[in-house]
Amino acid sequence: MPAAAGVYGWHFKEPPHLELDAGRLLYVGIAPRYMANRTSTQNLRKRVRYHYRGNAAGSTLRLTLGCLLGLELRRVGSGNRMTFGKAGEAALSQWMADNAQVCWVEQKEPWASESQLITELDLPLNLDQNRHNAFHSWLNEIRAQARERARKLPISS
Image (tube, rainbow, N blue to C red; front, side, top):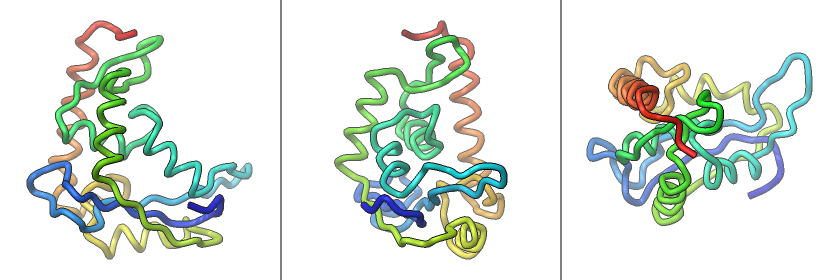
């Protein structure tokens, strides 16, 4: 994975939900995002690595996958951040290592094509700019329910 700007896409050998097909493109992202008042330090390598090794608080893809896989979202730290906890994040990372496949295209200004990709492709795991997708409302609700349950639970260490 290059340390360059570009667009990345996620496929899964085993889909995270029964209604999703194995092997097809389910999610796209960009690195870096457009920032009018400063320069982003993100690149393809950093962003994809965070999706693989980070946590649900910093990766909408991880949040979505964990919710679809039935992991329990929890408030952590001060209670403002939500992750799947150490064990859940580790389980998600292992599931991703076993199932996720990433493709990418280097592109100097990836934000220039993000909207077009989301509009023209069927990307059920993208929520931003994707209300037209048939999976959007249901996925948004699943994530909202997970957050609501997490708010009712004690803060996890």
